[in-house]
Amino acid sequence: MRANWFEWRHATLADRQACQAMIRQGSKSFFAASILLPAYLRDPAYAIYAFCRIADDAVDDENADPGATDHLRRRLDAAYNDTPMDGPCDRALADVIHRYDLPKPLFEALIEGLEWDQTGRSYQTIENLHAYAARVASAVGTIMTCLMGRKSPETLARACDLGVAMQLTNIARDVGEDARNGRVYLPRDWLNEAGISSEELIADPKMSPALGGVIKRLLDHADELYAQSRIGIAHLPSRARPAINAARRIYAAIGDEIAKNGYDSINHRAYVSTRNKLKIALAATGEAYLPCRKSRALKLDETQFLVSAVSNHAGNKDSALAEATNQIEFVIAMMGALDRRQKRRQEQAATERQAAQTSKFASLSSD
Image (cartoon, rainbow, N blue to C red; front, side, top):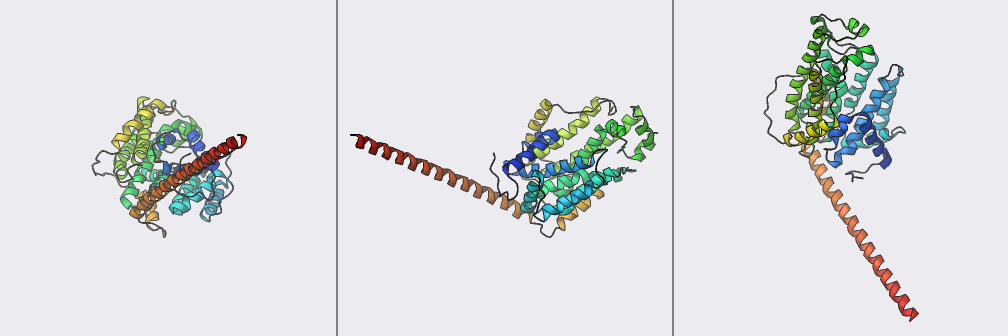
């Protein structure tokens, strides 16, 4: 098992492995990208995504407990109080929250977005949809950016762009599945302009050129956000850039697959094969270090509250100091590992000398 850069006070090795297994099974795209993360970030990232996965599963069911989000808030409170509830991801999350000083409003935003799901909220405009995506996706991206020690408003805003783009891709992919479950996330304004009623889409989900046009419009919008999110990736720690860029490219590739299906998300659910994910991840590694032109066309006001939450966080650490702390901890961890290895070698040598002396003594005695 990889060495960790800080002491896990609540989470055991088994807890951390359980978080990793949860992501491996529940989010193949994220897991594929996470392999490129530097070792010191993987377990903390798995802890965060495991909590997000559990939270999503708690409300994403027709038989979900109406009080599911209230229970999630109690779990979050317990983690922030350093008294996590009895569960692998709760214990791991509590450790990560306190080690990285993560702002609580980011997690609260995620739970609020899931509550919107549970109450069946619909979205009239693309701006309304931005607000939803900010909560269920950008909040996680903002948390990850803080985890990497990057807290500048520009970097955080671009992380938010990436989160919104990913969520819009998910929505475009799942139009048919959502409609069959009685949900429509596409902006109602866009549907009305195309002559489609959300009620009709739920009652009889069927593909049409008009619906394909709405899905294409959403994906084109996501592509703009994917493009400008690269600016933020360039500001991340160098060893973390390939993983985040791979996630960006893999999710964007889902949109490409939807396009190949003629934007038919009613009869087909687009996916990127494991083989293609590996190819994309390899290409994304090199691209992550290429120069990125700083040009932006879109500004998402709906994600600004997440950026402000980090800026206003009382325990907010200077990003440069946080990065320096990470590097110092790495050196300390490596020195500790070397010391332990040297000690083991010395103990082994002493044991061998003692064994040799015992053998020699036994030989002389027998003579």
